[in-house]
Length: 42
Image (cartoon, rainbow, N blue to C red; front, side, top):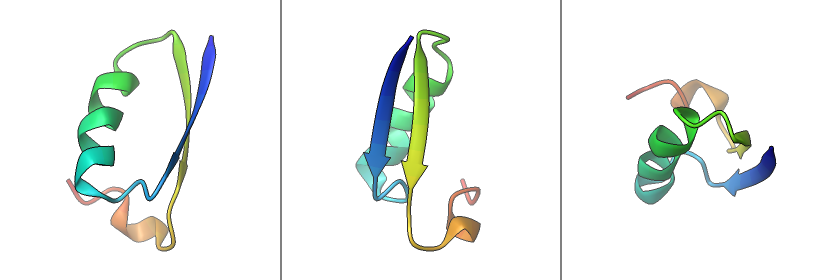
């Protein structure tokens, strides 16, 4: 399992990458952003 850190997880590019990586069990994601409430607004 590879560990991936995404800084600025609320950004446009980060959201696209997150969707692809969340569906793959080979990766463990750590998402960092200033306001956690923004993370779940898709």
